[in-house]
Image (cartoon, rainbow, N blue to C red; front, side, top):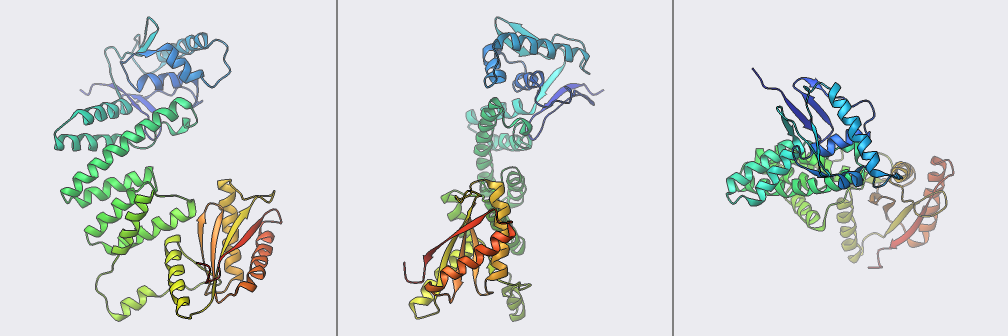
Length: 396
């Protein structure tokens, strides 16, 4: 016969169940008595000072008597637990200003507490194999950010930041151990889920490197391009160390040996579109640097233009959602009014770079005006762009 236990999950979402029966806590996801249960079960059986709980629950609210409010919340949670699927018992133990959740005769398990205990043991453990086991256990427990539906609550923000720090530390250790053991399939699996939870934190690099080690070059290249493209669209940023590692990873990209026909097929643009050519920032940098070398040998002229998206007051826009929508319209203007030989990319949330091949400095004003007029039409006249010449081929 399987022994029932209270299982509380808080990574990636919240759920509490006793056997197959679910504790609902009502429809309001941010209710105070639900949050009190969540706070207490981050460390079931451990004591929490009432003043600390009151600060967590009411610190940012305009509450005259936080102690009275907390007492009322404790009362409400007790009443709920009496009607819940849990067997009768005194689950909330209060003594000398310290409150704790005591399962009594039933076992209480919390993914957060199990994760924290594993992290504590990891820090003390000296055996390399055992440390890796604890990291693997923590990776399995960490199914997502801590209580994402309550991400605006200060106590959740603080705990989430701490859990994320522990997760990153143990995951880095585990991946290094797996690399030493040449377990690239394990690396790929672990890094893939980490990248889903925390995109653009460098886990994609581990994933792509493992694909290359397994000689799955085509998949690695596709994952590499997708990562770069997604980062450009969302404005994701890697640290300088990660950027260098990512660039070196791109340098290692290769295809299996192919015929002349295979190589031509790989090089050609699949479906040439109209207007300027869109590329990632890294590819744009290569295009620009090549052109700088070409012009030194008497090649074609070019102009590098910075286009900044403005808000309705004429200032550089800084709202992420607004910039994303307006950025799509600006790219449409590039495709509609620039030549197929021109190149553009997204530099930051509100900035785009445009490389005009063969364009002289005297034509830049006309180019900027043409793009701005089309962009304003697409925005219904409520926005605009600011164009600035960064390089006419001779500045740097």
